[in-house]
Amino acid sequence: MDRREFLLTGAAITGGLSSVSSVSSVDFRLRYAPHFGMFREHAGGDLVAQLEFIAGQRFRAVEDNEMKKRGTGEQERIAAAMTRLGLSMGVFVAHTIGWSEPNLTSGDADTRDRFLREIRESVEVAKRVNATWMTVVPGLTHPRLDAGFQTASVVESLKRAAAILEPHGLVMVIESLNTLRDHPGQFLTRIPQAWQICRAVASPSCRILFDLYHQQIAEGNLIPNIDAAWDEIAYVQVGDHPGRKEPGTGEVNYRNVFRHIHGKGYTGIVGMEHGNARPGREGERAVIDAYAAADGWP
Image (tube, rainbow, N blue to C red; front, side):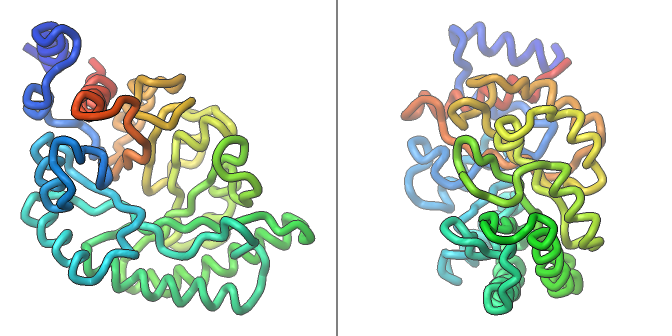
């Protein structure tokens, strides 16, 4: 019995909703990374117990946007558990993002200095939790500066940050965000724009975080943009649209997208940056089933 037949047989046995145990016997082809809280109903509130549950379902990574805000002791506890369980660490947010005022787009020296100080702090966090990637968002568009000046300011800030990260083998991944649904006014919104910035920074420590949820809203054209920007993509995140829930709940054909990036040789992490479409233990099982189905191409 091949892998696809196994999944279909398991679903038939359970009347269309396979159990957690049946899905956990399947090895995922891609390194999908849940986040803390996604399986709280099964694992409880303790973060290490959640990691143990995640590893038990054959996921191979975890991401945590809030890792930098956790205490040093908690970071070390999480890192030790992940090492024991064979889990890789995905992204965490590296700096204070400009949600209410221009950040890296402004060219302001004090703002840049604060950003670089936070990048230095993030180096220590990354070392502590065995992370390679950290998320950077340039912030809001400046209302009184031409886009060219803003781009130049962003590039200069990222060049200086890359010089901090390069000696440690760490990578900031810049994320384009949609402005139509979630983040009005953000400067970095499109993959070609992120690609242009990464090329200008010209450092292995500055790459693209391709969030398929945001890009489906902002510009669509997912697979062609993946191909065009491939050399600069270091990290992928997902969430279906509308709703920002697990694959299969919206309009994105994640089965085809996952098959495509796997075929291109992607070995990085696929961050599950979304909510659960249904509540409770049933909703958590549905998330696991959704990834088994989307990962189960012939």
